[in-house]
Amino acid sequence: MGRDASAAPPASPAGKTLASARYLAEHLHEAPVLILACVNTEGATAGLTMGASIYPAVQNILLAAGGLGIGSTLTTIHRFRNQQVKDLLGIPREVEPAALIPLGYPLGKFGRPPRKPLGEVAYVDRWGQPPAWSHDRSPLSHEPIR
Ligand SMILES: Cc1cc2nc3c(=O)[nH]c(=O)nc-3n(C[C@H](O)[C@H](O)[C@H](O)COP(=O)(O)O)c2cc1C
Figure 1 (cartoon, rainbow, N blue to C red):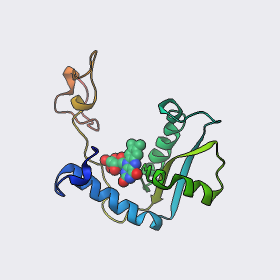
Figure 2: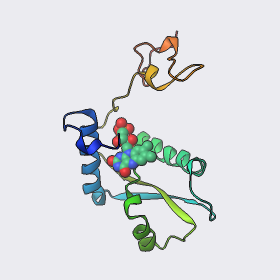
Figure 3: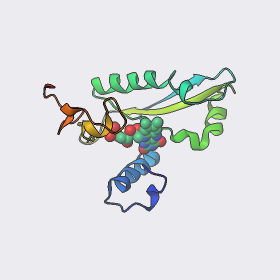
């Protein structure tokens, strides 16, 4: 989502994502479980490489939940009130909450989310060069690669 997503028309992809994010923010407290995945910064400034220490674990939680039929999503919405969250939970200064993951059994349909064609998200040899075999393939396609 771009920086000006709040100006996006409601029916556009960015507008739909924004509406979905708003809904999640307003209903987050209804999730039966909220996992707050934290990283120990040991006093260093948190950045991309530090994220690499925690987001794989977050992804594993998302995959495991999906495998059990439990709905989950990665959010960073707590960052808007980060210090309040830390104070509330007694989280030490050197520990940073990296992701807030709501878990719950889905109320509605729970299927595969839409994905961009593979050639738009994966390149070969050079940025922007789609793999020759990526034509019309979704990253979730089960068709064999030829
Ligand atoms: C680092 C990161 C932070 C995110 N934070 C939020 C968030 O705070 N609120 C939200 O609604 N979605 C957030 N998302 C988006 C969702 O986790 C999810 O990826 C998005 O809704 C696409 O859903 P899909 O996987 O079902 O297509 C975040 C995604 C990432 C990668």
